[in-house]
Image (cartoon, rainbow, N blue to C red; front, side, top):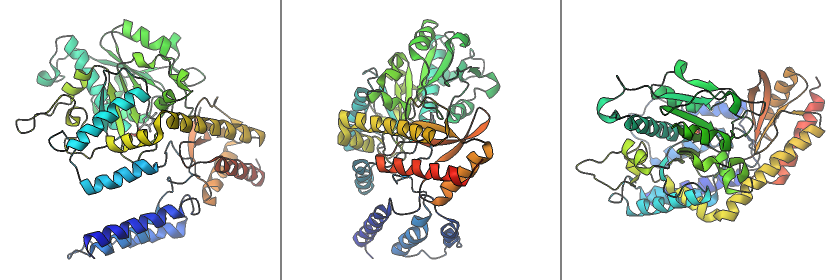
Length: 450
Ligand SMILES: *Cc1c(COP(=O)(O)O)cnc(C)c1O
């Protein structure tokens, strides 16, 4: 099979997969999963025909996907892939660009620069900020914190690049008691030490309580969040950020999914957030781009560009070259699917999607409450935390819902007890899928009595 026939075959198989969406199981059953053993072959001495490589991947792999690209998937905060963004990604594979700088890819450098400008516009963040397109909120938070630490040390006259951390003034970190695990991971990898990180207590709604905010000074990085991972709640930025900045601290905001509220009528939840120093957000969650697409946004562009600089004698570039704004040197142009999503949706399209998901989450909360469930959060955004009468019933119903294959959402533990964590974040999810979810859960509550 020649290259063109192979790509056409891949397109045909991809098309067949997309056609199965909405009709297949949302999570594979045990029999289907056993088909994954087909991959368990010895490393071949002789290469196989590419058409056979693709055949195995599709025949044994496609049925074993978690159908996160399905309207009935309510797990984590995993959006589907918007057609425009998925199609852009497909074309980019043919281009095979190394998008480190203009010299390597004029088109990538140009489109990512536009994408950066549009992201700042859509999220209404300081227009002078630098935007680095990285692989994930995890990586982008790591990059932002690295830039923050380096900048705080520089303000004290310490040259982090030359002298490292040994003997350096201590940089302290304050995070929410409910900070996302990946924020802790980024801090741990950067060497902050989990025992030294100060956790700020939260109120009943999972927001940092300003009255119990730990002391901040000009050597502190304060990490806030826009969209707590269980409740979707926002820290009180209008109170916290001015206090932190008055103390000379650096404020970073993890807005992996929640920052997109700012592009909708839910924007008041994010009031004051633009006064922070840096922000992280994902494309691959609420903006519904393919993986891996995320952003580090840094108000002081030079702080990010100098922390991430990778200019070399053979590859000098401008301060806004992506190789100087994120971890990777060789990279795919992750900003292009983000640009495609922004262009396809426009300002009104993003707002409509975010607002629809929030309304659907509220409808789920109302429907489940009417069916006798407890809704544990205020549902300010797209996240719904739910519990049945007893822990055993909560777990049994969640397992039965997953086993049905008609829907998928994940478990969590909230205030020490199991709960369902239902997230509405797929462009594909229509009101009919929301009604089906409510019906299924109300039915299961009848068959799994406490
Ligand atoms: C998902 C998530 C992250 C991590 O994002 P990745 O892109 O998966 O690395 C960080 N913070 C919050 C609040 C999240 O929901």
